[in-house]
Length: 543
Ligand SMILES: C[S@@+](CC[C@H](N)C(=O)[O-])C[C@H]1O[C@@H](n2cnc3c(N)ncnc32)[C@H](O)[C@@H]1O
Image (tube, rainbow, N blue to C red):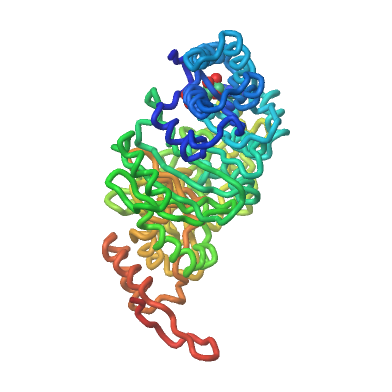
């Protein structure tokens, strides 16, 4: 088989596994089913589909005409369609079809075209490996058409999101959609609409994460998962995480596990999960899921516990606005700034390393440069490059603004600072000396002693949580962005005893993750007791 550039082909054993899970199996009369492969390439799925169809026909002779609607495959690339037709034709000839019938069926079944513009429905199975193309790389006119037809497609989505929606819309009421594609939509921002669309009208039946498994013919960094979606039913879904050694020899055990016959194997783990809604879905090592569900159901969200979360200032030209010279311009326009790289040995620096040339006044208005001659001279010397920034395109008079406004009250507030892309949530305390830069997230609170909260965030349970709702990068770095931090659930500070608070604080000050984890576990093992009037009376240990 030939592999044109830019596309990724699925290995045969993966295709066979997916066809089995989607119920396209030889024990059924496949001539009665209609199957759709919307991005067929050279036929990685279509070839086994036709083989299965021919096998299921063995006992009953059917005319080519009666089979012409059994398969619908499409690809936008005509040369791939030609290869796919050739491959399918060989199988049909091998199975006793005449040359004319083989020609007739291949041209009826496999077409060149854009699947996202098709809307014919009634397919019992929709299957495939949709393309990996970012929507912003699609020509603007076409993207507009997709966005009009498909409500889950936005500027930021990958096109496979549109393929999932399109496939589901074309599926028959009791059909199954089985795709292998990146699973990031289940948790990231752009997947929110798709999560909502699926949760409203369909049911997730299987997610099989194969991030490190060799599933494609070429090596790609695509975070693939097999996703099986059916009719709306219970929100219980089988969740399987395959280890990197998972291969064709594990398929039998996998199938037994999915049908509930065995529960674990060395090469994968499996759990039942309940997912739905537009919020990022909790997906984690199945062993951890119970713990996380418990944290989510017992504790309020971090914001409900009295916390504000945000990101530091983006300037659009750090080389101009951020400096190491505290006397660069008038002192009123210089703010000590903290960047991720300034944190050393777990501490914020005693003396500022970086400074922000701040063009905003205390009321959040741009300063009048006439009143600040040094700032004016400095910024004017960079005017050309500052004017090229997108943020000033609309209003050129604000050419010296930073992308974000500087929030005057944040400057002097005590806060926890978190860096994006760290090995685990690693909060740092700032007593109000610094303004955070855009690679830092900040947390402020009027209800929490921030060092106690810092201890809570340092615990392994919070790491598991961020890991489960966020996106872990290769090399195990996790994203601690505001969107994920906001989804954390933590005990309410009022729920902590003085001893718990002291222990979290001490764990935070010593940066002792084990201590924080033990303390958190103790809290999880405790349940509040109430009297008949609903007043808290104390705690009992939960065994
Ligand atoms: C990831 S490849 C998968 C090919 C094959 N299904 C497989 O698994 O080996 C995706 C295919 O989608 C095709 N494609 C891209 N955009 C498409 C569109 N709008 N409609 C139909 N096919 C499209 C590409 O040409 C490519 O062959």
